[in-house]
Length: 356
Ligand SMILES: [Zn+2]
Image (cartoon, rainbow, N blue to C red; front, top):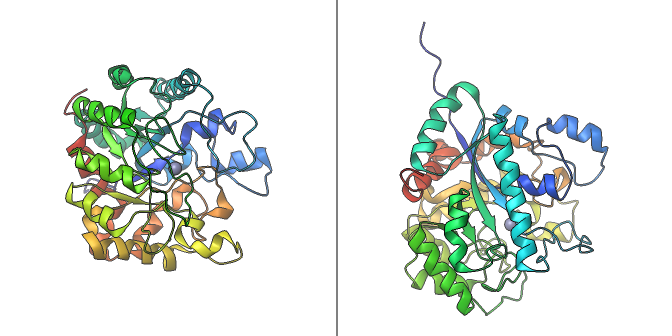
């Protein structure tokens, strides 16, 4: 008998796994069905859990580490405001890393800190299907000072985005505005990026105002990606990337993860939630647009499912993250493996250190 064929290891370059535990209070070790049954929510219903990542063949996820919410600032589920002090942000982020480490020690995930880790993981994943996590800091508030970067590196953090909302490192665009921000990096942001470049971190440009992106690119930063962002030409807010930035990321061998949030796929949906948003129409269009600018090898998926959102905010064909493979149905057959898997895998092989 032939050995069973190798499965395609799907990659999702943006999931707020820890936030759903530390801020929403979910137990992500349960199935999505069990979480829904427990929560009995009618809005913001869960779509992501570890068993569903496993069921859906998601082999690698970029798992975020964040500063957490400011108390009393839960008016919008999308608002991840700045923590009150850098030290509080640091403590929150470290607790999220602690959560990922505990999942690893329980055998639920593997933390990927190097190319050796990644290759070992992908071989094991073919047999056990456990997801591998690359830790990505979304908003650098928790990094109290640039010289702390080696400490974060030792804890396994490999990717950093400087802003969500504004941080002391730069101007953040949050969920985006039709009035584009003009400011960029602060002097501390320049210093942090220089240190990140030196110490091997990957820079995620998502949520940074465009001026800051250009300032960082002018520094010659070597490992650049957009873990979750769409094309501004299709969704006209400053949360998304101009054609020039998309080209610049691709020129640096970066990948752009398409966000599967309805409002980022169809801008009019923000005003009219009755509009139908689908993989078949909207994600097909967004993916083809990116590919028309820079080629399919720079297109990936950074779903951000459950990133302050839920089932009702996500394209119709998706019930849980286990349906991510369906994105493969809306891209050309020859681009399918790249978009679902190998574009991000190749990026990680290029950007992670060889061994931890
Ligand atoms: Zn985000």
